[in-house]
Length: 346
Image (tube, rainbow, N blue to C red; front, side, top):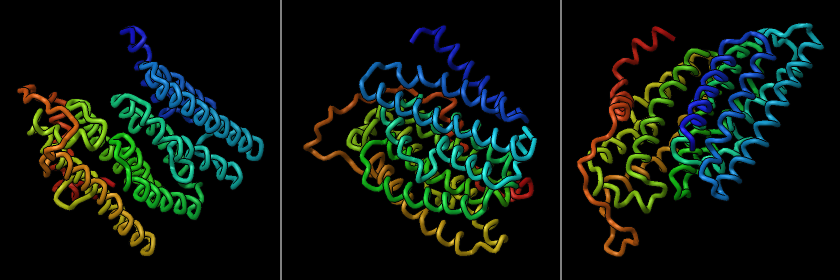
């Protein structure tokens, strides 16, 4: 892609995100979402591969439908209440429509079918943007309207996302699809607690962003797109592979690592809100995600390649990972001791 076109695209993404997260009027928030959608489309389609074109069309159609639903729900709310303010979402009908629209934009189950396919057709860096930056504006709208949302609907969407995100990721062999279902599952955790503690939901998103960025940058460095190629990636960058294994286990939520912190705090908050059944179901469903993260970790570091491998072994090079990857990996592994301080902030 032309460097000038790439610069304009990235600036448009930043401008669209800033407009949405800083607006109080529904029309301004909708405008920011539209700028974001139009800016990411050239990045998805830049490889000109048929799969990339297919992913672009799926993304455009899905996001267009969701944006139209956001606009329609805001107009219905203005018609019924006379308010265009985002925080004044007082009628159940526009509230239901907005929750559905944001669920489509985020990829919450059962509106998740577009997300794994779009990620599979995108480059790893574009998939990183789709999994992190593009989720922030819709999540901000949910945060601003969290007091008006229907708890039963949101809890149902959250548990469905955790179930399908864990279950459908079990049999995947493509790393991008595995990370897509991982994203769906993590969004379920955020949606589960967003009504009761929006700050905790935002914290979970920020920690998820740090861990996912570290994983995507590591996979992009070692050029791994499927599990079979990961078997021989240790010959190229053994240190990075070891760090990748720890980051994957952190995403799974194992206790000594950073990823355990948001799940622990969310389960604690749900217990305070007398939602013990939901907390129990969420804890049990996290085991599904743990299984496919362990598969990734097993393939990346623990096993040696079989003698009959069809992949050419990579030369060992002394290229060190970027400073950003090293910082994010360190944060993904070692932030758990700060949980008491984070708890006082939330």
